[in-house]
Amino acid sequence: MTQNSNEQNKKYDLEDRTKIFAKQVREFIRNLPKNEIFFDDLNQLIRASGSVGANYVEANESLSRKDFVVRVKICRKEIKECIYWLDLINKESAQKNELIKEAAELMHIFGAIITKCL
Image: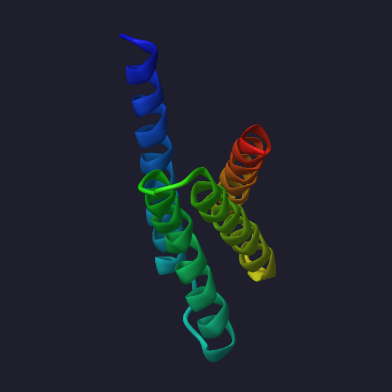
C-alpha cells in the first residue's frame, strides 16, 4: 500500500468509527427508561452523537484546509457534548462507561487533528 492509500484508509476508519459510536449511543438509549425528564437529554445525546460523524464526513469533503479545521472543531465540540449528556444520565452501566471512554478517545483524536493542521 502506498502512503496515500494509508491516508485514505485512516480517513474512512474514523468515519466508520464515528458512525459506530452513534449507533452504539442509540442502542444504549433503547435500554433506558423513557420518561419526561430523560426525553430532552436523550434527544440531545442522539443529535450530538450523529452530528460528530456527519461533520467528519463533511470535513473530508471540504474544499479548503480552513473549512476542514472548522468542521473538525465542530466534531470535537459535538463529542464533548456527548460526554456531557452521558454524564447527566444517572444510570451507571458498563455500556455507558464504554461510550464515555470512546467519546474521550474521539475527542483526543479530533484535538490532535486540529493541532496538526494549525
